[in-house]
Length: 249
Image 1 (spheres, rainbow, N blue to C red):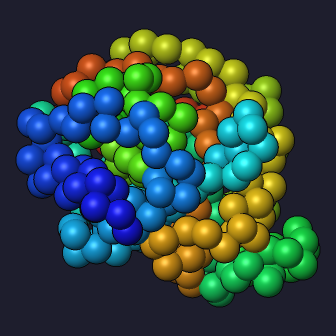
Image 2: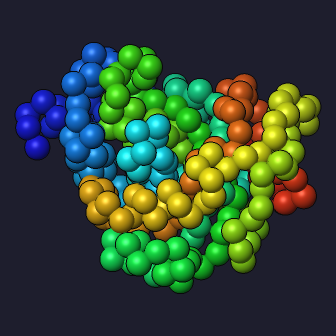
Image 3: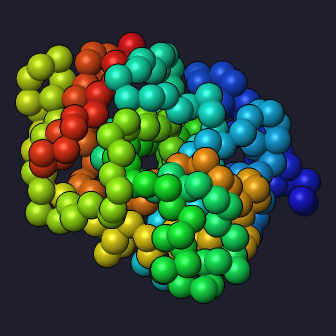
């Protein structure tokens, strides 16, 4: 990696270790997509963390992207996140897949049916959105990608779904300490849960070790950002599925 991307990776890693720190957006403006992906991998090495969860997306340019979510930011449904000084823009409820076999680029290129053979089950989850950048809106086209697509953490649901759920049109209800604070209507952001997984896996350009057996891959927010206070008990309902919850403090 060139010296500047090394320095950016060091700065992001340090912001993970000390959430009071932020990396200036100006340092990211000229990054390319490949440099941003390489920074992701270097940050994971610097932190010495594995990635039990990854996220994928299909930006407007049609080129799939993905990012690891470090194990230190992942909890199970019903758990607690010590937010402290970490940035929190909001929450997203998402559909994810859990793999029971490695999803290789070759399998991804073989198509949807081949990819589904690697999926153990589907699951719902909550992603926290938060950045290590002081202003992610001014960090250029690939700054947020370098910052692991501004993930702030992930809550893995426990309800096992044997098939891809039909969520379009379902009600989403967000509650904080028992009071409803936001209502939305669900819609897959990229058409379904599998297409963005196939698209990114097939590109074979990640720097975090690929989509491995046991990994959860989350596939994009089903609604606009869900805004929550920084402390309290949060619960999200999607239709008649089991609710998801976490405590922020």
